[in-house]
Structures are given as C-alpha cells and as structure tokens.
Image 1 (cartoon, rainbow, N blue to C red):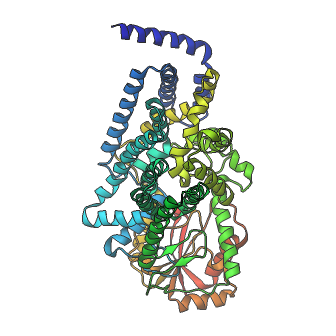
Image 2: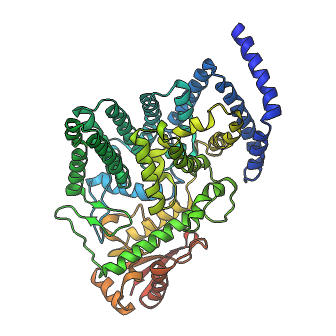
Image 3: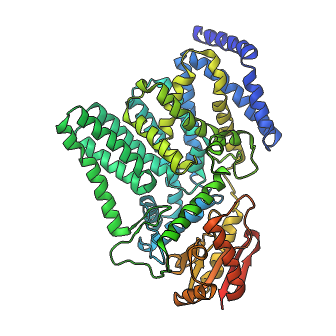
Length: 578
C-alpha cells in the first residue's frame, strides 16, 4: 500500500510539473500533428500517447525501477503479440521495389536455385536463396513469417548486445525501445519485402562476438566473428566497407600493442570472410552495385552483349546513380542532405521527401546526424572500435552516396547509444530536446492505426506488374526493359524472366551507333520487345546519359517500333520491333 501511495504522489507531482514546465512538449506535438494530413481522431490519440510518454519518461528518470521493468515488459509483450498475429496474413502488397524486385528473384530461385544471365550478372544474395528454399520446401506463408521471426530475434539480440556493452537495465530498455519502435523497424518487419532485418540479425551477432573479442580474443571467437561478418556481407555487399574498416582498426590496435600472437589468430576472421565470398563468386557470381564490375560464375556468361565504350558506360553509371539518389534527397548538395530530417518533420519540399508512416522516421535521421559530433566530443566514452568503425563508415557513406535511408539500418543500434548520455546527463532542460523521440512514439501508434492487419489492398504497382507480366508471358523472343531508374518496370511475374529480359536503362544513352545501327544490334540479339515509361514524375530531373537515353528511346520506337500494348495507369508502354 505504501508503494502505491508513493507512486500516486509521484504521479501527481509530475502532472503539475508537466503542466508548468513541459507544456511546450505537447504543444509542439499538436502543431506537428496538425501539419500532417491525418484524420482528427488520430491527432487526439497520438496527442494523448505523446503526453503519456513524456509523463512516463519523467518517472523513469527518477529511477523507479519497478516502473521501468513493468513498461519494458509490457512493451516487449505487446510488440511480440502484434508481430506474431500479423505473421498469419500476407501484408506485403504495398511494398514497391522491395516486393517487386526481391520477390521476383525469390520466385526465380525457388525452382533451380540459380539465375541465368542475359546481359549482366544479377546473382542471388544469401537471404534470397534462403527464402527461395523456404518457399520451395515449405510454403509461401513461411517466407512471410520468417520476417516476423527474425524481427523478434533482433529484439532479443539487441538486449544481449547492450548487456555485453555493460549497459544498465534502464539504459538498454530505453535503447531497445528507440530501435524497435522506429517506423522503419516495424515496416521492415511487417510490410517491406526487404532483407535488412536479416542483415541486422547477422550484424548484431557479429557485434556481440566482437565485444567478447575486445574482452578476450581467442580462436573460436575470431572464427565466429568471421562467419557472422561473412554472412552479413553475403546478405548485402554494401556493408563490406564497414567490416573492412572494423577489421583494419582491430588489426592495427593489436600490432600497435605488440600482441603478435593474437594478431596471428585474428587473421582467421578475414580468411573466413574471403572464403565465403570466394565460394559465393564461384557458385553464384557477384555484381557490385553502381559499378561495371560483374563477376560471372564458371561456365556462365551473358547471352546478350551490347557494344560498350567503357569510359562512356562508366560515366553513364555515375550519372544514373546521381539521378536515382536525387529522387530521394531532391538535390545533390550537402545542404539538401543535412536539411532532409527537417523535410521529414514538416514536408517542406514537395518532392519525394515527405512524412510517411513507413518511412525511416525522423529520429533515425537525427540519431545518425547527431552521432558524428557526439563521438568526436565524447570519444573517451566510446573507445570500442564498433563506434569508431561506424563513425568512419558513416563519413564514407555521406561522401559516396549522400542519402540516409535504410541502407544504414544495420548500424542503427550503434547510432542511438550516445543519445542516452545526450538526453539523460542530469540537465532537466534537455528533456525539451526529447521531442523527436516523442514524435517517434506517436508515429509508432499511428503506424498501427493506419495499417490494419487484415484485408491489405494491392498497390497499383503490383496490379500493373501482374498485368504486364501476364501479357508478355504469352510472347516469344527477348525483351529489352529500358525503363529508367528510379521508376523502372520490374516484371516480377513474367515466366522465365532471367532468360528473357535484358535489363538496360542506359542502352540508348551510351550506344554510339545510329538508330539504324541500334536496330540491327537489337535484332541480332533476338530482342523483340521494348519497355519504356511514356511519362515520368516531374520531380525526377534527368541529365547527361539518362536524359540522352530517354530522348533517343522515344525517337527510336517512333521509327522502329509498333505499340504492342500500354498500361495507362502506370505509364508503361511496350513496343514490338518491326
């Protein structure tokens, strides 16, 4: 009884404190919500939830451990029930490139576990092959359930990882809450047919082993670190630079401290990673995104080869990359990148940058941007090479790609760690800076309200994809898919896609042949049909090679093509070569 009296007294005092000192927080939340096109009753529910979160955080800051335990357990139980219940339904209709791109590859792989090559390598990654095996030997429902299962495993691995780092129960509860309620985490668990949750699982396993290595390195731990790091790299090749940086830092440290015996043992990790990569290249091949580097497995070569001038084609790839990522950040300047979180808050720009409940979410952006100065300012507190490698990899990523999206999701558990000290260092005024976390929690609730578990609707992209795939499945000859990034046509359900489709959205931009010469080259390679987008979104600005491709393609089909059919809602046009 005394405990409840004390609790009631604490709650009463916090109500008065909120009313006086923290009234600005719910006011800001209400302003934010009013700026969004959401139904009024969602405003009210989210507003109530946000006030409750602020109220709860004040109690937690007073070290009420019973409340901490209770809230954390309620959170884990509720999110687990939500994920498990949703696993019985097919929810991934509204994913665009995630479903239509990855699903296509899984569908192709489930029959023979290999992809043929037309004009370029598109080898499978590890998780696509695993999902294909689940689909073939079990059923499609288990494929979708696997996303839920891995998401739950990740919550457990987050707890293990943070405990390995020596964090208190309150600290790791707080950090898990941030990671597991961000919209991108839930979206990757429930809606997107993307492999990033699987990547996070392997990455967390490698992080956990690495923390043990820092405490006491031995052969078994270095072996396990090499295995889990290699599996992460085979899941998504773009994480390779991170593991190269982390391994390099660790090896340099061992050499600097003259730990030669452990240094020798540590080379088992890069050896295992290299062997896994070599095995994959020999058996499946490897394609490096946004480069002209395609490694084909033995006895597998392209069946369609267009004439290329390497220098021209390389420049085309670089320009296409710029066009594609401009679609995400609206422009290519560093200021546009830095202002991106503000765009996510208030929809300032009219382009792609807008608040959607299934976007990464504002605090994913903010945690990444704040991470860099926090590591510099308080580097003595984060001497673990995981933090330093994350720092260098983030700088590399900003320079090379300059967009923050779920490609950095595998490092999110590390990005949020410094935020704890930033917000909870004894300065009560800094609770005002906690506003973005409250917005995230409100977004989490609205995410659940806006995305019902039952009766998902098929998106127009999926419906158009099924329609085009069905039409072209009844044709003969090869198909040149020349639709441009970032709104390309996927043809997910086309029979024998890997044997029939030549994917090249730059052909008419890099080719030095005349229209007549290109027509002859296409006929020589048995190309019978061309796919193009007749109208592109006005937000996408083409220039250089991509613009040249679009312009020449439309002129070409006027002279050498007959309209076969058109998917008007998706602006997709198919021409048959004369």
